[in-house]
Amino acid sequence: MINAKKKGNAGENRFAKWLALKGIDNAKRNSGSGSGLAKSDVHNSLGLNLEVKTVKALNLKKAMEQSERDAMMTHTKPYVVVHFDGMPEDTWIICMSSDDWIELYKRAQEPKTPDNGGKELTWALKTLVQACKKVIKLLE
Image (cartoon, rainbow, N blue to C red; front, top):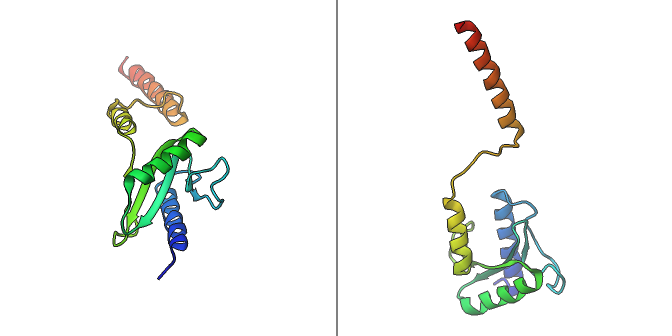
């Protein structure tokens, strides 16, 4: 049987690798004691305090309170990431406040607009203008 600290460290590493595979920059397990500015179990570029728990059972209220305390110190948003024993390796339950959830939901509902400053869009528009000018000349 693996001890609790090793199990927790392994879970944090697995979640960090999962985030990195999903394209989250700088996702890695914080190896420090948690006493500095980096209180999150998994460092990330999302501005989130990720409290990772790999457990058989969990007092979710206490875990969220821990994440909230740590998030206040680091000015991040508190999240609890849970992997219960018996779940598939790459499956996680993410717990967040209702305010954070509704903000995320509303942002997802906003219409998507192209990045007007993007090089690819600028090139495509220039090419389109040139093609339109060529078609107009041919029609004259």
